[in-house]
Image (cartoon, rainbow, N blue to C red):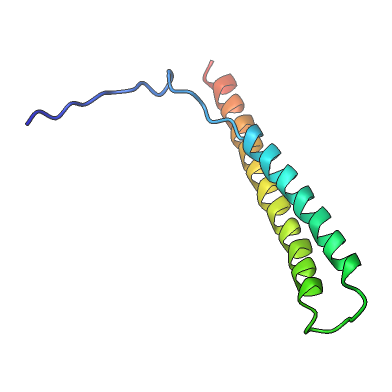
Amino acid sequence: MDDKSVSISSKNAAKPDARRLVLITTVAAWIALAIGVVLCLFNLHEFNDRNVGLMVGIGFLVGSVFIYSCGMAVNMVEAYTRSSSAKDDDSSE
């Protein structure tokens, strides 16, 4: 059995781009927020913990904030990485 190995230079490797992931999480968060608002508005007639539609709506509201926060965290980490690598490139010259 022959093991085949491939070496990849770090300079030739494609750098990850998080913009698409941030866009997807932002859109998903807004969709979840809209679903949560609609569910909450249509199920306000009986405001208690046995109202499943209202509880699911509140879950969508909370989930949308969590999804948006995760997307923005990825965006900030990617921006920090990009800026720190640009500073490293400038200082090495």
